[in-house]
Image 1 (spheres, rainbow, N blue to C red):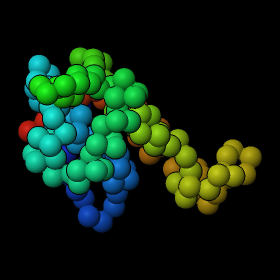
Image 2 (image 1 turned 30 degrees about the vertical axis):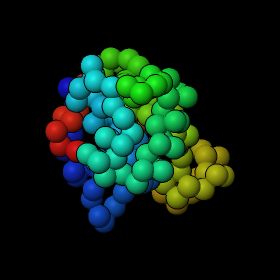
Image 3 (image 1 turned 45 degrees about the vertical axis):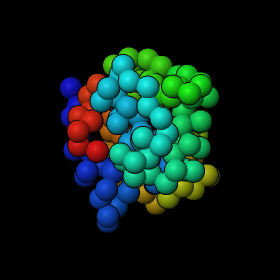
Image 4 (image 1 turned 90 degrees about the horizontal axis):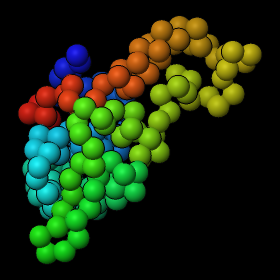
Length: 148
């Protein structure tokens, strides 16, 4: 079972594994995982986890289109997770926002492959495999939502 310190993973200043967009998307779904029976309004999530409102609504729309969130319309509507927290993997969140590029080159060189490797190609193999393993095996159930 994986239990990550979200503060270290998402707020480390010197090095970022994930884009700000990915960090925000992770924070949204992890926060929502804290109460799977609740309908969350975008305003409430914005207030609680301090993500710019327009950015938050854009991400929630992407997460809903990818069927990670269910939308209930109307006066008492809101968002909820569409599946159990043990069924939503971190890689699903990245795919929903179009950022599942964890298999790319360390230098983001599009031509980098086994036949045309970049200078870090061999050194990056093991960390890249570990990252892919983490993203494909870690669910929201593995993450403590109180740490975001």
